[in-house]
Length: 490
Image 1 (cartoon, one colour):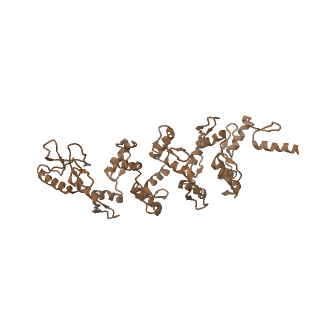
Image 2 (cartoon, helix red, strand yellow):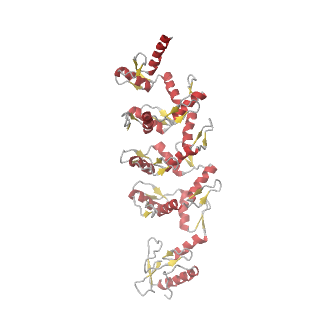
Image 3 (spheres, one colour):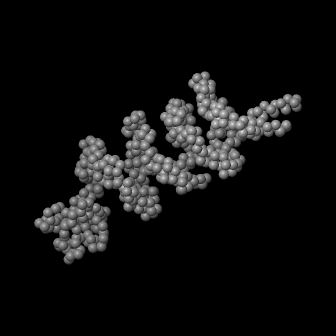
C-alpha cells in the first residue's frame, strides 16, 4: 500500500476523501485472501505498510493507542476501523436522514435505527430478562438493564466520582457540573439539559396526557408517572431497607430513605441555613421565604406552594378517601394519615423526648413537644397577639376571629371550624367508641376522654386551687370551683 494513515497529527479537513479511496483500494487487493467483509486495521508489527483484515463482533470507536491507526472523520477527528462505519458517521454532520417512518414520519440515518423505532408502534418486545422477566424492544437495552441486577457501574465522573451503569447517563450527569442547558421552551423560556425533558415539559402547556391507567382510567403525561401510579393498585414494594426493613416501590425512594439513617443532609437553605436530605424538600422550603403559592383551589380559592398539597386539599371538597385501614376499615384521604392511624392499633411510639421521656408516634409531634420545654412560640396571631408553637395551631385559631366554619355535619348540619372537630362530632351519631380503658374496659369516643378517665385509676390530680389548695383532676373542674370563691368574695 502506497499511502499510510498518519495519526501523529490531528486530521485535516481536505484529506478524508483520499483516506477513504486508499482504503477502498486496500480492500480490493485483499479480497482474494479474505472471504468476509472486515474492518481495516494497520498492522504495525510488520513493515508498517501491510493492510490486514480483522473481524470485530461489535465495532466500536477506535482507540488512539500507540502504533495503531484507522479511518478518521475530517470534521470531528473520530476514528473508525472500517469505511462503512465512517460513512454512517458522516450522516451525523450532514443531517442526512434517508430512512423515514411511515407511521409518524420521523427520519433516521440508518435503516437499523428505523427498524428499532418501528417497535415503538408495534409494541414488539422480543428480548426478555431472565432475572426479572422484564421485556425490551432491542438487545442493547436488555444488556444495559442487566446492569441493574449485577450493579455493574463502569462509567465514573472525574469531578465528583459518581459512577453510572451507562455512558449516556454519565454524559448527562456532566451537565450538572457544567450547567449546560441547551434545550429551551419557546412558551415559558425554561431550559433543560435533555431534549426529552423539554418534550415532556411541553405537555404542561398542551395538557397532553397519553398514558392511561387500566384500573382507574386516570391519565398521565409521562409513562414513568403511570408506572409509579400502578403501584397504588398493586401494592408492590420490592425494595427493602436493610436497617429498618421498611419497603419501597422504587429504588430511588429507598436511596432517599437511607439518608434518614445516615443523617445525610446535603441541601442547605442559603437564607436560614436549614439543611435537608432531599433537594425537592429544599425547593419547597424556599417557598416559605418567597411566599410563592402558585397552585389555587377552584372551589375555595385557597392557594398552595405545591401541586401535591393542592391535590390533597381537593379531597376535602370531594370527600374522596382511597386509603382504607385493613384493621378497622376506616378510610382516609391521604396515605400518610392512614400510616399515622395504624399507630392506634399497634401502639408504636418510637420518638422519645430526652427531657421528660414522653414518647410520640411522629417525629414532628416530638419536635412540637420540645417547644413546651423551651417555651418557643414562633407563630403569632395578628389580631389578638396570642402565640403558638405550630403554624397549624395558629391557622385553626384564626378561625375564631373570622368565624369560618367550613366543615358541616351531613346528619344535623352543625358546622365546625376544624375537620377534626367534625369527626369527633360524627361519633355522637354513629355511637362509635374506639378508645377503651385497659383497666375497667370502659369505652370513650375521644382519646382525651380516655386520658382524663385514667386519672380516676391513678388518682392523679394536677390542678390546684390557689385559695384553698383543693386538687382537681381536670382544669375545667378547677375553673368551676374558682366561681365558688368569687361568690364568697361578693
